[in-house]
Length: 251
Image (cartoon, helix red, strand yellow):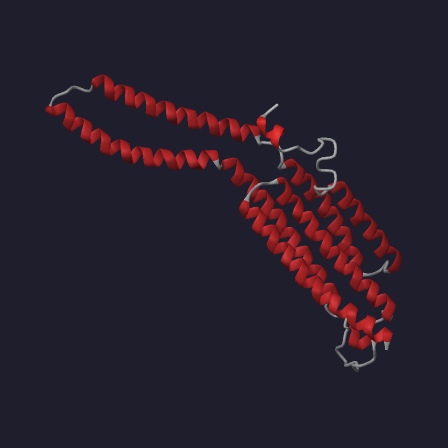
């Protein structure tokens, strides 16, 4: 037992992560339940079609987020093998230099030339090692960013579907024009429609949060934060409409 365990009690391993980590299966179950709720109330709506595609995408991205947790062993093995090969080459070059070095004017002159070349080679070697060691992280980052881009697109699609759901028309405060979109929802139906849209945006952000939970990468974390802020902003507009409908009911 380490000294750390003596001074700071660690949580029970059986309980650790039960209520502190996002559980992807619960998120997917919530998305499925939301899809069923939309189907029961709006079976012919475009929002249902969006939710169906969102559920399929969420299942795919959940698997991707889980797959990014373990190491990519082929990439890791090749990277470390190449790194050791480069280091071995440097050690061999140093051994050759020491073996053929002589303490005379010509030897010192050759040593100075070799040192200048070695400095340049070490710079390139450092860049190569940095590239190889970070290759796995960059591959995971690329996959996560592509997934987050798809989630961002879904969020904008949800926003487009609620864009024309204006409470003012339901409350009879605006008159229709020849190019006005068809509006058949009642006040209660419109409230539920907007509520479902807000829930879908929140679940979208939770799927994105799986990548921040499973990948310790600042670039991915920033992308997830940006997506969460986008979802919160779009959801805030929706809740403004819901509040208008609620206040109208009180009147």
